[in-house]
Length: 176
Image 1 (cartoon, rainbow, N blue to C red):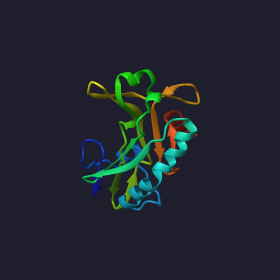
Image 2 (tube, rainbow, N blue to C red; image 1 turned 30 degrees about the vertical axis):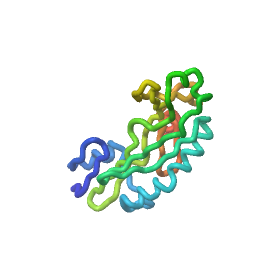
Image 3 (spheres, rainbow, N blue to C red; image 1 turned 135 degrees about the horizontal axis):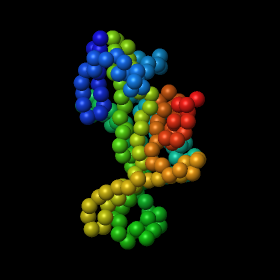
Image 4 (tube, one colour; image 1 turned 30 degrees about the horizontal axis):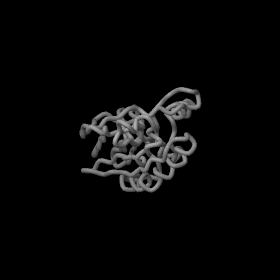
């Protein structure tokens, strides 16, 4: 019987089906006995892990922090604003632009009969956020080239490996 379920999507509810957690990728790991241990680990490690990933992928550094609000936890990430040189031709139209995380970003966990469960990865996309010189903001996908030559903006933080992966690398890892 489920005693406490926190869904970090748009809906908080108790889910009566224990199969739900297995199907949704929830696991347990002896390193994390509760929410506090999991959140502390992520908070202490996620930024350093992304720095390594960014260097490997040749993308700008993104400063990452874990945001907590009303018992929900998500990652936020923003790069420094692009320089006029980096914006090139677009500097004539844009007041500012940077990389940011968009979509996903949630830490998902639950407690089932006293057992702490969590989804061992966090998904997000990398976008270019920009502000027009005439006002208004928007964003577009930041597509980096994967090892297979495919354009992608999806990335995943694997909590157990303390490592970021491109979506392509992540799915390849899962097949092993």
